[in-house]
Amino acid sequence: MSSFLPTFANAAGFWALLGVPAVLAIHFLQQRSRTAVISTLFLLETLAPESRGGRTWSRLRASRVLLLQLLAVLLATWVLTGPRWLRGESSQTVVVVLDSAVGMGAFRAEAVAAARGKLAASESRAAHTEWVVMTSDPRQPPLYSGPDRAAAGAALSGWRPRLGTHDYGPAIRLARQLAGAGGLSWFITDSRAKVPTDQPAVGVGHALANVGFAGGRVERDGTLTVWRALVSNHADTPQRRTWWVEQAGARSTAESVELPPGALVELSARFPDNADACTLVLEADGFAEDDRLPLIRPVPKALTAAIGADGETGAFFKKLLEGVDGVTLTGAQPVRLRIERTQAVQGREWGAAILLPVSATAGRRLEVAPVVPEKHPLVADLNWQGLLGPGPSWLTRLPEDEALLWQAGAPLVWLRPGPDDARQLVLNFNWEASNAGRLPGAVLLLRRFVERVRDAQPGRYARNFDTGERVWLREADTAGDAALSVEFRAASGTPAVVRSVSGGERAVLRTPGEAGFLTVKRGGQVLVDGAVQFADARQGDFRAAETFATGLPAATAAAAFEHNTRADPFATSWLALLGVILLGSWWPARRARP
Image 1 (cartoon, rainbow, N blue to C red):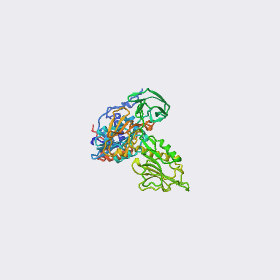
Image 2 (cartoon, helix red, strand yellow; image 1 turned 90 degrees about the vertical axis):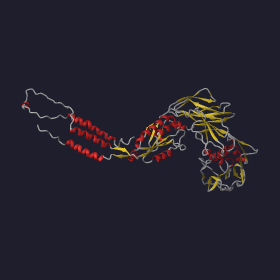
Image 3 (cartoon, rainbow, N blue to C red; image 1 turned 30 degrees about the horizontal axis):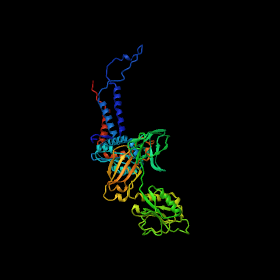
Image 4 (cartoon, helix red, strand yellow; image 1 turned 60 degrees about the vertical axis):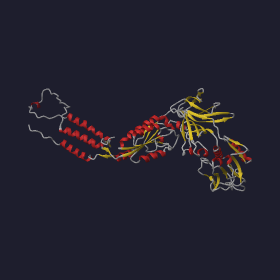
């Protein structure tokens, strides 16, 4: 906007322009007096009284008083509206934050239009503007940062919402810091519930009667392999959808499913014979991300294990290992995982192992001190308050060992560091004298450790992933200079995309944010085959979506306006001139003598 054109601080001041028709009306009603010499005989009463009336409206005549009064109204309007001009040195930063939740894909066109509208409306607030277009995805760099508004608007076309339910606070706080006191930050989303207090936002959503997949799995059922999938109705009305299975270009016979309001229904069938992968497809609706569910036949890595404990303890670990896919119990060598009793952990080369003390802790009372877990993935989100036993045993922890559980100031469980395929989990307590075998936390800890040892074995594996889930790779597979690449084929049918994995991404490789099939390769060797499923059912629920605009907080808008503009320097002079004009309009005009 040109700095020569003013903006007005008080738009209500334009109501003063109503004084213009008021002045004109007064002058229309006003009649000009004339001097005439007449007889006074008309004062005598007549025999028949007559009613005489004159003109109410008179022809408008230009006069000094009329012109001065009109000028006074216009001058008063100018002063009341408070005109201000942009400072030539004024600057601002405008930040647009786009909600990266995958549910925004249903309103992508509306969101892009709203963002471009806010960019255009914000340009006139300062002479120079720095534009920043970013998303709520903390791992994604800004889509644009620079002084060109056209380029900022064009960058919006590259926005692809792919995250599940996540925290918007970090992105919004960063946007506010970038905008500063004199700038603006806008949040484009689909629900008012996502908007923090005092955050300017635009909502572009509306309710959708969406039906979609809420997850699926492939499992063994006796000698057969079957798939099971959950279908969720996110509408408040009954819905009916048809579904079918696609595999290698072929399509099965379509079937229908009836879903009551808000219902969750399971579908299941035999996995297609002689097929390693397939896709379940629902009839399309307003949200396409959950209408296709890729599935792959799981193939775990192989892990050989041996149990050196007997009795009830040996029976428990045998049942545990048989429940983990890919684990084979054997007495032949080599054995990758051992469950053993030991008298001393130090210096013994077991390889990957779960170790327990040899002798029982006799003559000790029940330890009542609480079990305190460390912050570690193996014990994350597990409850240990129900663990009963005699407490820590006599095994000694080395300085490099990583404690997982503490009780009464002593280590109860710890992890011996090393490569993932050679780590040791030490259970420093009397297993038989405790209830650990019946405690879900202890069972899950052991299962997580066994799965980690299994996944660290060399070889190829296939499994079903959720979007954004970590893809586990061996340390040996991510080390060295061999090229690591990911090939992804979206379930929507777009062509496959192959990209190389950077060095920083190798340690925490994650699946893409949309459904499809992926293959991870190291050079020409295939490491992982996977099916990526959209499984965040919360993103498919659009009952709370709405269209709204919160606008700018009054204090923020006023502060930015004061900072970037300057007031009319002649405001005092206009008031003085207004007084002179009013006095001039009231001064009587000199009349010429007849």
